[in-house]
Length: 297
Figure (cartoon, rainbow, N blue to C red):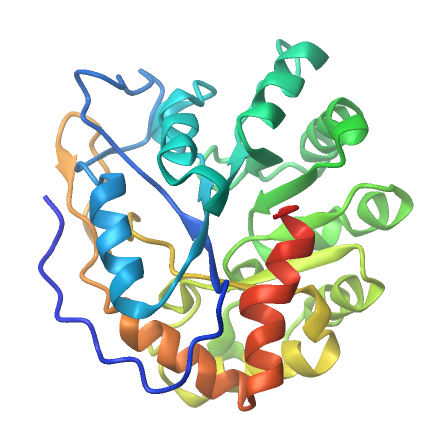
């Protein structure tokens, strides 16, 4: 069940074509069974629920990122894309050792435009294995003009920096690259992340700041967001991370139990983003122009 959240009223003019670049859809399990290897079992979160939220906050387009509980079976996300028709794109999860180019082409026809490497949830922290996975995936998707989306920690991303810069594939870093905002702008590895963003080959999602700070509304997150915008506003997109899955502090993840979503106010999150961006041109660039390019709307 989705938590009941009173959405904050939007306090700025949301530009036409605004895109939420990071959402998931889940369930029902009897129609879309979860992988046995999943780390958690989510509640249901439907297209209808998502559509109501987006209508409320002024979002017209969306990107469904295939979530880890389904493994490499992308059907749930594929059906979600079809529900929203031309207003939706997707990011798939693939097994680079099993999938073929015709499979990738079919996913492309269904609206997918990228492949996600969820290294963090999979517990992959070893650089050599991560590089091998990255290179195999890049070779598979290159012909389709897809990008690779990485969910990992700042230390591993820094280890991948050289291979990212040498290749032709664009890379999208999930959730602020999981930069621990409270450690400030002089922390180890952050210079490398800034250089990746500056290169133009790497994009970043200004999404889920609650994953990088105990105070997502605080000055540390604001400082980080504005620094990223200063470095390269042409390579940033925004995402809500709806319906807000994720581990709860102090509570172990047990896949036999349904894990509740976090009660996040997405209206407030969108208003907070506008505060980071500060002006209407930057808001439009990040909400409309950049997603149009990255996801081929």
